Image 1 (tube, protein in one colour):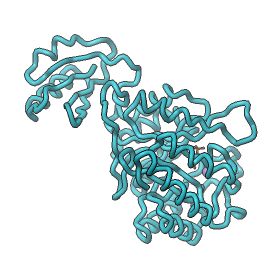
Image 2: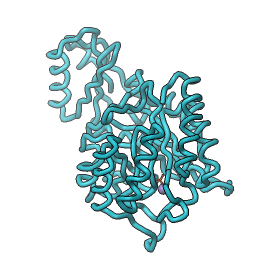
Image 3: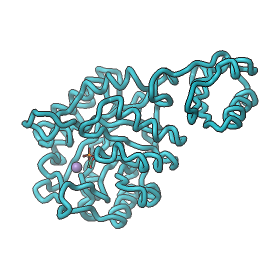
Length: 337
Ligand code: PEP
Ligand code: MN
């Protein structure tokens, strides 16, 4: 249920509604907006009686939310969510660019890529310290050492860090070093991990599972929001289809579909979406045109030596060229890079 408060409602009136929700054993989620403040209720198994809330001072209306995902739905919040992270933002007028290697391999490699993507205008540095690999014999990431390298790269470049948390055991460790915690495609429905990152206050980038529908993606985001962490953005990274000319099939139509259902920002990852370096720039341009809130792109200083995902990594010069194109396209759709 959603409690819609009157315009100019007092803090005291909001607090009384929150107290009432909590006294019933449910969780209250105040959602401030430009036009109105609303309070979402979660934790109730059955329907609530709107009259119980509508008689309270400051309440305009109590409405039941029809979507199975509630806090992340447009029904509950009409305005787009804008997430502020370390001087950058996602979901507002900025078209956010997250770039970096697939995996942190060494200090030298990470700093080399970080300086190049920063110079080209990227807003965030990505890099996996804990890597989800299909084969147990493939490089699994440097772990804690990788996190320390990322922190060092942030110190040197000022770029906020996006890095993956693979399991509940390492969430706190990742949260200590990361500005944004990435939840990978393989973990999109790892509900205990989603709840765990929902209890941190770090922004979360949730990637779409490789065979997940949009509704399933939004339900997973709801798991995070229901724990009180509302700083979530989504990432389309391609889904499995019969089509085998690319690693995955990048579903750009997910962007407008998600935006009509949810207020959360959505970015696009054309690197995992295609798996092929030469396809990354065309789909990155398309992502900017389709109205995505940003991009995540893998870049490596020496892709032929990369320990993971070398074939999809852009050379730094290619990333420079892509940024020039993206700037022009973003401007056409009212964004700046
Ligand atoms: C990644 O971004 O490093 C990654 C492993 O992506 P995905 O979870 O989308 O496969
Ligand atoms: Mn990768």
